Length: 193
Image 1 (tube, one colour):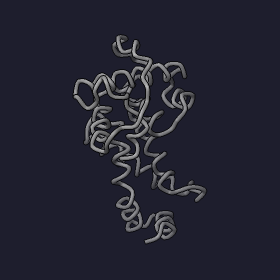
Image 2 (cartoon, one colour):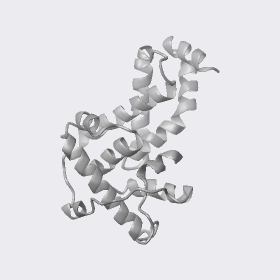
Image 3 (cartoon, helix red, strand yellow):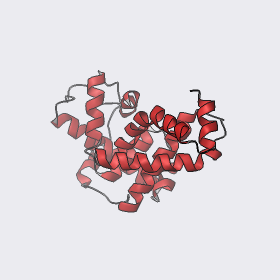
C-alpha cells in the first residue's frame, strides 16, 4: 500500500490503514524510543503513546517532507514529554567527568562497535543520555534542546560534553575502544539506528 493510500485511510480513521502504517514504521520508531528509554518495556510504552499522537494528529501532516521524518519527530517529542514527567534534566551527575572536555571525534571502526556504543549510551544517566541523543543523533541544536527540556542552553552544552566524556570512560572500561585509538564519533552511531 502506498503512503498516499495509508494517509488517506488514516485520515478516515480506517483501522486497517492505521495498522499498516504502524507495521511499516514501528520497528524504526521503536529504535528511536529505545535510545531514550531505560528499558524495552518503557520504549514500547513510548512507542504506543507516540503512535496514538500520530493517529490523532495525522491531519496536521502536510506532505512537505517525508512521512517517516514527521512520525520520528512526534516520537522524539513523545519520549521527551514522558521523560520530563518523570525527571528533571538539570540534575547533574558526578562532576568528575567534566574534566574530559577535550574529546576528539573520529569514525567508529565497525558496525559491531557502533551497536556497542548505542548500548553504552543507554548506560548514561537520563539527562546525559537525552541530551546526547537529541544533539548528536537527532540533530537538535543546544538552544532547541534547552527549550524542549526546560533547561538552559549552557546546561545542554555541559551535559553533552559530560555525556561524551562519560561515554568514553564506559567504552574504555568495556574495551570497545582503547586509549591509543582515536575517540568515537557519536553521530556515526546514528547510521545503524
